[in-house]
Length: 191
Image 1 (cartoon, rainbow, N blue to C red):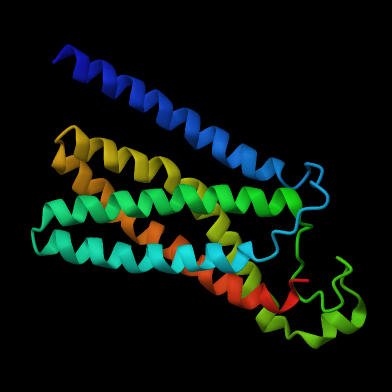
Image 2: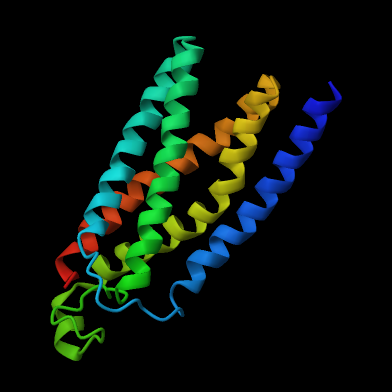
């Protein structure tokens, strides 16, 4: 019993560390120097696909738990977590090798001129930035939520697991879906 408590304590510490380090590492990508000579321009479509698959599997996991198919639910959530790690690694690889794409940057010079700004409606720009901002904020918030939900299930504390996943699942699903929508909105501007 003592080793389980110790493992849980260590896992809780790891959750805290990951919940801080991952967002800081991702934020650091936007000031880090780019790796030259590597073209990973195909990755945004790949990680949009990963987001779409994650969203689909999250729905499947919800169906499984509602049908009391707990083993299938657990396996599906594990796949979602693996996909999330893969997404993160590909996202980091892309942003280490590519300049940030700006919404509306038709000529790909990383600046929006008057003509480019006029080509996009204010409503489309507002929608894009609201989706992007909520996607980013919630993707940071969902990290500890997913990990604690998983920990509670591992510990057999299914009451805590259920309470937390009632909040975690919709946020994780929203992050996955908005990742796909944001990709489709910005994809015309990838160079």
